[in-house]
Image (tube, rainbow, N blue to C red):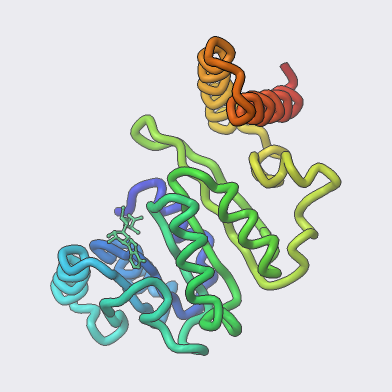
Length: 232
Ligand code: SAM
């Protein structure tokens, strides 16, 4: 059984799609979807030796070596153009996920779907998708063991399609998530807002250099955006 977080990622993989899971660690996700018969072939990519060995062991133990290729390398360098239909990158920061996509752009030409699960800074991913002609087609937010996770799903298309005129709010909060506005979403942004207000009150006491002033402005804008979406 997968964690709720990885299950949410798995649920977005279309049946029959060939998969690359980048930063796979134990390769739990590819093993699960291959065993379920959802995916005919998967690549598990890992850049660090320890996790790479864990992935190899797991795949061998589950006797899935014919369907899962475990490869050591940085980001998308472990896949060839045309090899997979779908890429998952989960359990890292949004900035790192965006860097991996940016560095491996030329591998994405025939990829149909990206499923990305940032632990923080989903905004970095939404910005990267927007600038690179990937259309956000779905999002999910969930809580597990006291932590809140977001899952972003993108396909090649019109990157502006999913955003209304409220682009800045959408990039920060997620266009699908702010429409749905479920309890986890409300909790996440109430927490963020409280945190920003605390920083703001500390900054207000600091000397008003230009840098501090612009940080104060930025925080106030973000607080306003969140208040507008949450309706308080
Ligand atoms: N994807 C799994 C999950 O969501 O449970 C594992 C997440 S683990 C916290 C992040 C993994 O990404 C680590 O095993 C790390 O070695 C790997 N990683 C980090 N940067 C990477 C990169 N540039 N290329 C491949 N793997 C990377």
